[in-house]
Picture (tube, rainbow, N blue to C red):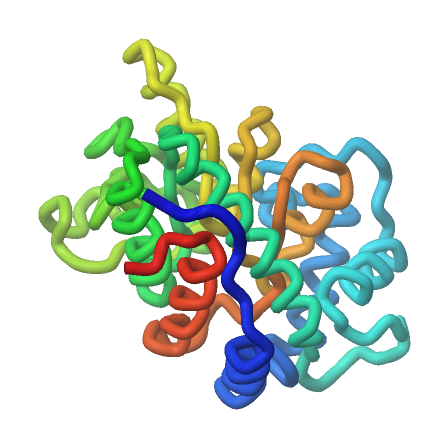
Length: 280
């Protein structure tokens, strides 16, 4: 069972900060300013492709979103800065990781049910799977509702049918004709429809329902919009998670590049599990 209190040393924090910048999880990241600004424009226009499950309570115009993302991520607050690569302040990443880990630790101490899901299975499946393993070992039930169910998702190629699948306790979607369940990484997706399907299936089965949803993209936004406590990772072109956090529907959004090599997330896993008192 997890212990009491937090484990965080100056050395471990300095090492992680250096790692974040070295592999471009923070600092100068691969996400371009042009891509982020396009996402902000889409969100301001309430385009579902950018809302990814969040229904904003207030009007967020383009300038509001730039200011919010500067505060939450450390990107340039200058609307005239329209090209180049985005910058994430590693101190903001570290602070958010601490809050993220604290929520993981809290649910572990209660032994409460959890749901984990990702729209980046090629990159982040291992990160979430390590959390799922640790939470399961602490006594939490890692939920896998609606496995194999079909869901129609709008993609850039039009409406496509996907199947909800799980690997090591982590939900994701794969094309419906994409092979057997459990057969390798699935599809990149921003849609909130998979988490809505999973939560509805859990409710229809009589529970349990998750006391924490962990993930990214539509998994976090869709769950948070429905009133579930949700924490997750978000890039600078994903304003929905940070708006959800600002409006109180998402508990924690961690700013970082969500599409680097999978092994680059391993130090983050160790850091989170150590702070959450879940290290083996």
